[in-house]
Figure (cartoon, rainbow, N blue to C red):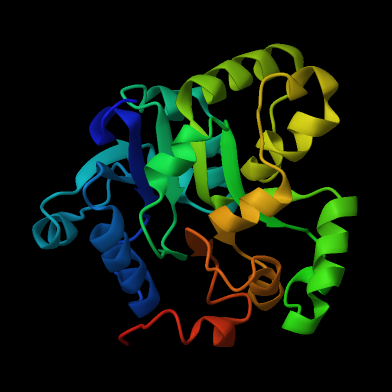
Length: 250
């Protein structure tokens, strides 16, 4: 298998110079656990991050148009852009690591070795499944088994050749995507049967071992009290669950 430098890079989108305490903790943990991989900051072209560069000399920086960092819709356009993925063709995979993620241990090469085209935390776009307690774990499992699951893009592993192929084919036959970018790569990949051939996805139990997002207490029961490789949106969905595992200096 390729070495760390050509196999996978960690890509961290940052759109403003000042970081919250939680974002700083997320970045520090990323550099502590995954800092021996290339770590690339994806930023607006006009944003000055020289202070961050000074603090973390190992970081590299990749600028994109300011228009892609003006809000959620703009960011979604960047993440479904072929040009975004062309930027990273030196790597077989990229790990998108937004600063509301937190990595627990280095399993990055192991997840790359599984050969999936896209992996993210399994979740449902229904509020009743956002924060389920541990005793509701079976309800969460039943919902994940019977409904359309979104593999969230905020902390996600993406295979660059597969994404380039998928987007080229999708753009040839379908209108421009205007929704959340992660839904294009998981829900649409299964709903549109021709596209299913071009995106290999894990089943939700395996994706849950990659990352928790919604209902972490129920997720923890479903993984027999094993933390995943990382988590996403831990401040948003049941932050009390994460208190024993994540320390943040304010």
